Length: 202
Image 1 (cartoon, rainbow, N blue to C red):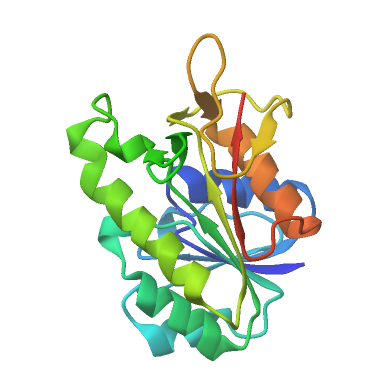
Image 2 (image 1 turned 180 degrees about the vertical axis):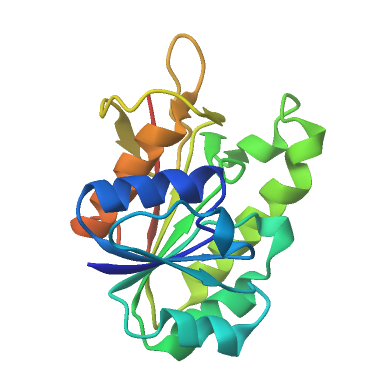
């Protein structure tokens, strides 16, 4: 596939980039500072601004899929969605947040007392992004929420998938960025969650 990856130099983006290239896909890696993206076969680094709708649309036009891997507080979901729509690309994959996942019927993770205050704004913006996608009628979008904790780690390929409920185990709720990226690229290659949010965790 030809994939446009917005935010290719970040924690999630850099690992999704590695996973895509590992599987032989062609990637246009879009970042504010494209010089930070490692030179690699199949990767074309491009400078992009997440607030420039026309510029983004031009960069992602002609691809099979677009991946959005940007912080919610450092972008505008409406601009991103409109840029993808304007580009003519139908498939849109969003690196989501965990805050909007349910921990009990009608109770979201962000609304629990244990949710860290410093992540509330980012998590709230992520929830708004998901609601905007749910109203969209044009794009084949997917929003992949991580579990409560996500950090650099091993690429094991062993994880579980869920839908709108937080995945937990006896030691908590977590996954590595590397395994998250496997789930992300699996979904791009064999779409199973079109116009849906899903989640991944150990």
